[in-house]
Length: 144
Image (cartoon, rainbow, N blue to C red; front, side, top):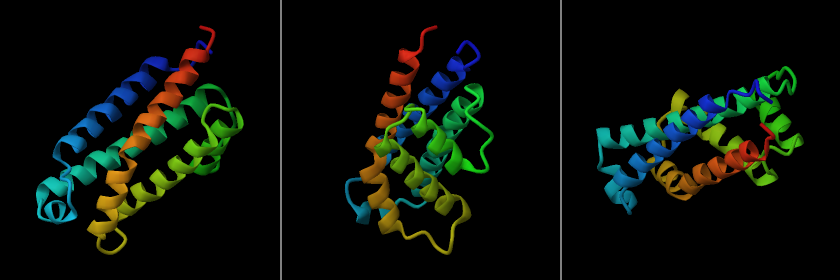
């Protein structure tokens, strides 16, 4: 376990936490307000995208450092972490959904439906805290 890059994982968790705090600070309560944000709305999308990317990187680091197998794709990584009880079944589903949302933001399949994105962001912010909690629980369980 000493080969697990814990400091990098913790740094990435901190980046996620900081990004989400910024999103919470600027995310309005209503869709009408959100729609009118202009560039600030794009900044919120970027912070969410970056947070999802950091989440996926953490999963990749754990998979690689613990030699859980060579994945064919990110789904394999998520499955490996679930199989080794590093993440819960609920978190496996959340990460899968986050990955899909990130792909939607990055590749901009058509125009982003701001209403769906607003609802997803508003409802999904707590998912990042849950991810952090599960990863920290895993790190704390290690006999270092």
